[in-house]
Amino acid sequence: MATKQITVQRFSVTSSKSFQDVVAAIETKIGRPDMNKFKRDVGTSRTEDELKEVVNEAVGTSDLMEMARFDQGEVLRRELGDKAPRVLRIVAGNPLIMKEMVKLVPDAGSYAPVTILIDERSDGVHLSYDRMVSLLASYGNAEAVKVAQSLDSKIETLLEAAAS
Image 1 (tube, rainbow, N blue to C red):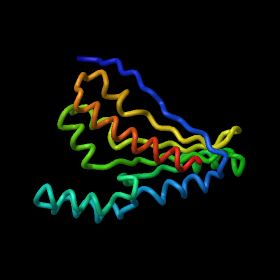
Image 2 (tube, rainbow, N blue to C red; image 1 turned 180 degrees about the vertical axis):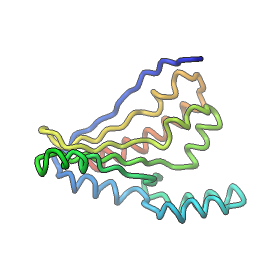
Image 3 (cartoon, rainbow, N blue to C red; image 1 turned 60 degrees about the vertical axis):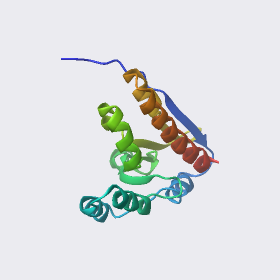
């Protein structure tokens, strides 16, 4: 049995915009494909070029797509009612970027796609993300870290734009 210690860097930005406006700003920049169709199209793609075409049609202007969403605030509202803060977890990424990281560091599959957390607090709406570079750094693969840096840049640019 092996255990690996991983230090995680969390990127976070706070917005004075409303929760709905922050979520809308993210939704305008990430692709939100029909995931059943997307999975079928990925499954029927026969070449790397066909796969790239499927993914490129699914991603938004940020080069990212939403793969799942979890409204954790909905669960809080069951107990706290309308006073519950809104909390939304968006699982997002780009399968082509994920593929490149996993080829180099198989454990990258545990971290990609990534989580974008949007939550209301007393000081504003927080947008948080655990940097992929920090998750992969301990594996010692410079190429994987370079791919992770590019992904981190895409996500951090998205979150900063949504917050401002």
